[in-house]
Length: 154
Image (cartoon, rainbow, N blue to C red):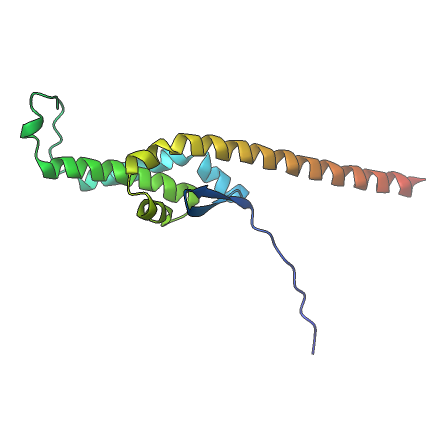
């Protein structure tokens, strides 16, 4: 019987905790393309949500004088569209179903929306740290190979 070769791989990324909920940010090269394009991807999802809500009339000029005339269903629909936009951003950043996990623990989509900017900044800083680590490792390998090559020439 032949012995199998087993190689351990380490996932690219890092955990992010939002309250008690732990999510994983995938920092693989493949996912970083999505991260840097998150706003455009989320806007596409927003367009989809707006298409679903097209039949609902959103008043353009709501103020304190006419707030009583706004239909509750219209307000709910507006909230749902905005909530879908926030959900799309979480799901793009952390994978499908992430928003539902966080929202189940913190049912306040405005607070979750407000957390997106600090999350983006923190993720960006961590990506920079990882890039620096990768660069150091690559430079160390490069130096090692150049030394070996120089030693062979002697």
